[in-house]
Image (cartoon, rainbow, N blue to C red; front, side, top):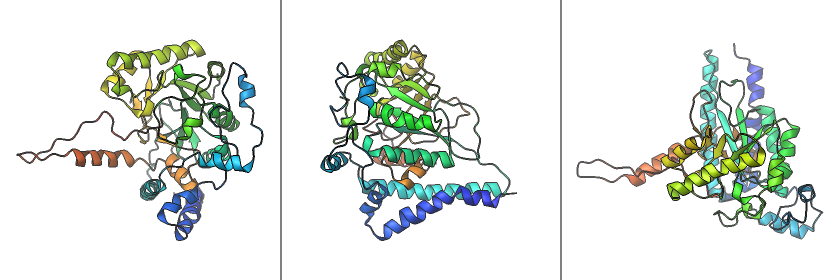
Length: 379
């Protein structure tokens, strides 16, 4: 028999978010303004800016990690403006589709419970980049949302999972200083596991790889070697993220292997740990890239395809869902509940439509691509 009270309390967060964070806001804003209204209106801290936490030869890591002194409101406002939130119209469209997807999926799960069947759960792996000071409190709010309604597991988890609530894993690409400063203490306080992927040739410096103009990553600093070496904890796993963060499918095979194998050996030498996982920079790869990862000794590879993971199979490549500390409440709720799983299918359909070329016999030839999903420029 279905426990009605349990189901009612299970969806109380969704009802609140949909009613007060989506419908009510939609009444008073344009489509463009809807998403903006989901975001924090004021920074909760101070944005990490380029150069503020560098010069590791002069300052030790603990000193560099201390909260900076208060700065004038004008500087805070400027720092806030320097963190872009992306095209709000596009994000709003994605959020709307995801909300519909989520509601339909949850209705089907409810029907399954009513007929005495237990719906299967997948692992949703989130991937962040930096956690700037200005959004530290928003990140904590996101962790609290997960704590109330979901379960956190390691991203490498294999085997069965309980189906009573969503299962979530948390990862960070690029090993930024802001992650150690603002994310790891909050995660440790809640007993949450996380995985950090490290670009081993960039330690202690600012990111020089390709990224979107105005990206908040341009204000970040990669953790220095001594900080990476000190991250040993049951709640923190380390993985490789190549050496210099290139698009691996665009390199010659030998260069790609050097990036993949070199990052593993360098990180193992630094941490004295066995490195078993690799996160693809930008999610970019082809068949040769994946084979190189196998040959290098990795047990699992992470992409940027927002697909939930079946932890009972032996798939070598796992998808992840992009998360940002400035995601709105409803947006983040849908992300960690796997409601963006529709995106790869739409992307594949668009490619097929673009790649369709009529022939004399009426057939078509789809364009081949190295990955099944549009890759992020930030990862």
